[in-house]
Every structure is written in structure tokens, then in C-alpha cells.
Amino acid sequence: MHRKRLTAAVLLAAALTGALAPAAAAHPAHRPDPVQRRLDLLTAHDGVPGALAYDGRTTRTSGVADLDSGRPMTDERGRFRLASDTKAFTATAVMRLVADGRLGLGDRAGTYVPQLADSTVTVRQLLKQTSGLAEYSALVDWTRPGTSEDYLALALDAGPVFEPGTDWGYSNTNYLVLGMVIDEVSGVGFRTYVERTVLRPLHLDDTYWPAPGELGLRGPHARNYGVHPAHPQDGRVDVTELPGYEFGASGGLVSTPVDLNAFWDGLFGGRLLPGWAVRLMTRDTTDIGGRDVYPAGSRYGYGVASIPLSCGGVYWGHGGDLPGGSVGGGRATGGRGTVTVYTTTWAAEGDSLRHLQGAVDAALCAKGH
Image 1 (tube, rainbow, N blue to C red):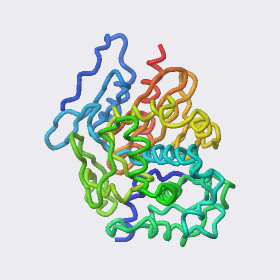
Image 2 (image 1 turned 135 degrees about the vertical axis):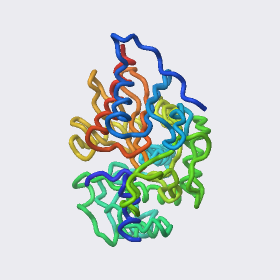
Image 3 (image 1 turned 30 degrees about the vertical axis):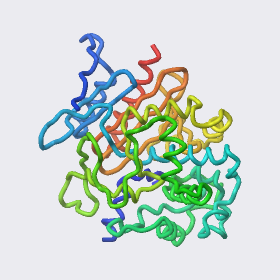
């Protein structure tokens, strides 16, 4: 598996080791809403309890926020776990350090992380997922919280997947290490540094890092459902409570569709980094089309990926998956805007993945007309 975006693999280790939604805009019967149609396919065809798409103007929902009560799906201000969308925030913080001259892309990670002192892996390779570091999340006993150093040790003990810079391989370990780099260079810890350089400048007041031991979600939110890896015999259960703090720099943030859209607009609109830094993030890329969840023509840069649109151009963003949810979206080229789509159960393969990505595509392409 080339890509483990804090997917079911995050909790798989445990199995191996121990306000109302606003009404959707009305559309004439002869012009069905293509975004709503895909959300409805997710809930009616794919078994997703709830789905949402928010494009900055219109909120579309399908299904329910809670299978027990049947309450309506939460709106664009409902909280959800970003999972690996967190990587884009971490990458932005790294590039802030680079822009300020405090860190070099060619610097060896071992300069800042003693466990990698003998490694040639660079900051750039970590950002691009070309380091070859093994995936740590499938090796962790998630019933026993550990430190970043503990998790990195597991990956290093497993050995490299390939030599640094010779291939592309999605690994949460890359962003675990980048969090450790930010800790050392910033002197304040990656969570505080991301808050100072990304969340506060964009006024993302509903986005936060979970506290140690915090399992639930703050504020309004939908419930999340999935097959818990530690108890697969129970089938699909409520998995809203997860150890979010432990997901760290690679997948720990909690946010809302409003805040996530604002982040994409702020990053690509030049409000967080100088233009040259954003250009590096989106031009120094690797072709990843056909690998894992990425369709043909996709490319991975520094914590962001581009996916082609059916109407031409691409959108830049990231994706994230957990047993209890999937998220997709980003900001399109050509002034087509920004969208966030998320589900309340894992939707990262087969029809559900096509419908989720199709909702993103339909929303961004519709905004260009």
C-alpha cells in the first residue's frame, strides 16, 4: 500500500498488537444538482451515514449526523477530523521556517532529529514523501500512547522501503519527523508553531489540536462510524472517539469545512507564505497517478497534491481517511474556487471513493460556469 493517510492502518496496529444543516439550493427538476447526486449516492448506495460538501456559498448534505437519533447532518461549521489534510498545515509551517531562513530544504533531517543522525534523508524528501522511511502507524500499539521518538524508532527498526530520493512512497513517518524538525527549529513545539503561523493569521478559530488524552470532538459534530480494527467482529460501530493527539503532525488536526476552505484560500492566495515558497510546494512534484487513491495525472508536492478536473485544470489540496471518515477537496486553478467534501465513515476505495472525488470535481467545475 503506497499511501497510509492515517487510514484504517492507524488503528490497525491496535488490532495487530493488542446547528441544523441549511437547506441545499433549489435546482429545477430538469437540472439535477451533480454534487447533491453524488452525496446521495454515498449515503444511499455506499452505506455512508452522512456526507457534506461546502463550496463557500452552498452547503449540501445527505444522510444523518447520528444513526441513533436521526438528527440532520451537521452544517459547514461542524467539526471533523482532518486526518492527513493535517500534512498541508505541517508543510506550510515548514515552509515558513524555510522562508524565514531558519531551515533549509536540503538540510539533513538528522541535523535536528538525533535518531536520524546517520541518515541522508533531507527536509525536502520528507515533504515530498520520497525519503523511503517505513510507515510507523501500522507498527504502533495504539492502546499504549508513546512519544514521537518511540514511533520513529519503530519505523527505523523496520528499515527503509527504498533509498532516499529514489522513489515515492506515502508514509506518515515523513510528517512525524517534520513535526520533530519544527519542534527543534522553532523551539516552541509544532502544535504551537502551526497555531502561530497558520491558524491565527487566517483566524481559523474552529481548528485545533486535540489535547493529550482527549478522545471526543469539541463543539457541534456528526458521529463517525466504522469497523474498529481492534473489534472487527462487532461490524460497524461508533468510532467518534479516537486518540487524536497521538496522530500528531501527520494527522491530528480537527477543523470545519469553513476553516479548511479558508486555509486553502489563504495558502494558495499568498496570505501565509511568499509566492516563491508556494510555487516550490506546487512545482517540485512527483507523478503519483494511479497510485493508491490518486487518479491519472495526479502529482504530489510539499504536503499538497494536484488532481485533474474533468472541466480542465486541476485542484490542489490533500485527502485524509480514518475508519470513521474521509475528506477531500482543495482549491482549483482558473478561479473555480474551493470546496471541502467529507463523509462520516471511511470512503477511500471503490464506488465511495469515486463518488467522493466526483462530488469535489462537480462542485469545482460548476463554479467555473
